[in-house]
Length: 523
Image: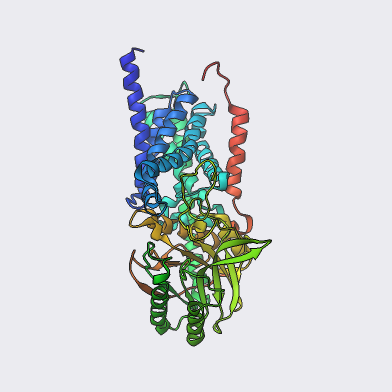
């Protein structure tokens, strides 16, 4: 091939890969064109066709860099504003994170180019490979499952009901299977070749039918389950829960001069919420910028208010304990009874890198922790459930809500209500608060539990067991929002058995690699 033709072909491939990255990002908040998720990978698959694995890996890496570089652009704002990094350092931090995450779509592209499989199996094989890699991303190096592909459909209630069987990974599988089926249809129309063989009409028809079967099956199951959940909700107990959105400026939050004003604001908003006669009032993560368990004037003020309100409160507050001459710090949630007594405490399990501790501190001495007031936080005990009368409450603090296993374990341990308390002020007015909220929807559907969310600056709200948003607040507004919340007791298949679907995909990919890897002399 002439050099000019090679440059033209390479340029087309790189453009197609970058286009896939942009389409993927556009499927998520803030653009939120979720339908694009079903076609976003078609350009990448087209670019990968005929490539050696090394070339396919590069193309997948480019798609990943474009996708994660745009999807997570809020990292630059957060690291610059609260990590105190200059732009010339915060941009490389985003670049490093995007580069790591890009390894997964790169591996997807390389595997799709290398696996020797019949073309009619390409659609389900692509779904399995992508799902297996998402599962790995959620667990390797502490995991970062931010906006897995299935989350793009968070508002499509009929489609996402299957998450109570497969978790969010099943929705990702359906999306990628449709992408691959459309790619084969396109390749058949233009009579192109896949892995040195023509795409036959039979193979194309089989792939499309498999894709439609996956989509139709998920939609049919969704309609059936929505009707079932509606019946359960109709007869379920519905205590009223109030969430308080203090809208406290993060730059002033930990300033001792503003602590009294912060407490006054939360008490004033809580007093407003008491007019709705709530059975529980929820404050956000670290709503009290002091140690609630210490004997201090501000802590006593909060306790007196709770006693006067005669209502249980769930309050985000830091905690510490001395052990062996050292002080361990925890990001915690206290459950206060109507008498003002602490009847339970949950300590955050999955800590935020660079937010609550600095990983690889020796290699990254220039990176500061975004909560500088204390040392590195310690993780709590996984699966802890707080007792709210005769009910269990499972608390996820901040981005713990993006980890399916944490909510699942709490539900399995008896949580009848899920509560996510967070402080998304770190994100400013970027897309991150809306992305964060979108993922919380799946924890409700997977476990068939109402999820209550209290965020310092928003988005606070209530998500029903079917994933429907019952009520929500805006960003950067003071709010006291109350809502009757249905409490279901059934355990979903996902709650009982966990990520069997994703693990099954991982096993299937391992089998495909073992059985269908074609040896070649050159990469």
